[in-house]
Image (cartoon, helix red, strand yellow):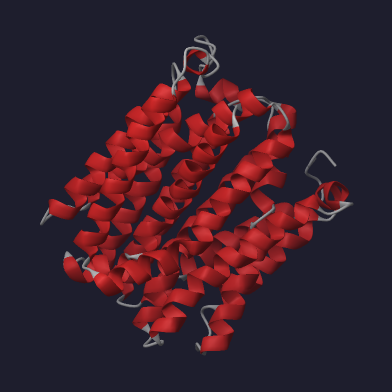
Length: 367
């Protein structure tokens, strides 16, 4: 991979980080523009993350062609999203499918071309930077235009990226394809031999991450926080996640993740639980940071334990389903109780379950 192609790949993967977090960062503005209830907003977030899970299953064939094609689909989805007056959930679903396919295809392509695990870690670090900057990028864009105008801006970017990716496709690169799946293997067989508690813990971590990142902006806005806190709350969440993942480069990090990772769910539980207390600006930012810091290395640590037992793609799909279900359930509880604070109890309960599962003394965690 040439330096130019590598930088182009980094740009696209950074943009997927911004694009996946964009619906949550824009949720207050989208809710107002489309007159959505919390139930409707939760359903929209569900569509984004569930679409991303489905997109991961669509990765077949030449990888760069997939990236170009589904980048164009992202352009179409953003344009439809901006032009619709009802049912924003449908373009949100298409948006998620496009993102899931582009992210998965890019990860596989980068791994095939770079080979080393460190290269893939750096790629995901770039994604986390995009996620961290998404609230600030979106908020700055909203200051100069409406939510529909911002969505059209995303449409223009992905149209340009699709065209640029088509131009970078060469005869050798276009032959890189996704690994074929065993046609005789079912989803259930993919996780045979993996403890049920480990599966549940692994899919809970990204679900909690999606619920918190998706609703933090609206939660801060709902309780009359200043605009700066509405922006800073999700940014602190992603800053904590980014910092904890960056610490994986430090000496001894591998050993820590193998032996001390059980401490992380307690930090997640404390962070999410703190959000239910009477909110002050500094307290909310601290809780958001702690939640992100605890979640950062937790999913990779649990995922590695699953893959040590069984090489499969089922766990990725289930994690995507959880990432769609918990934000949706948060909106449902909020609408039913007429209080988003009660809705935020959903990720707290998830963190409590995660903490309980990881404390089971008789379960073989592969340590």
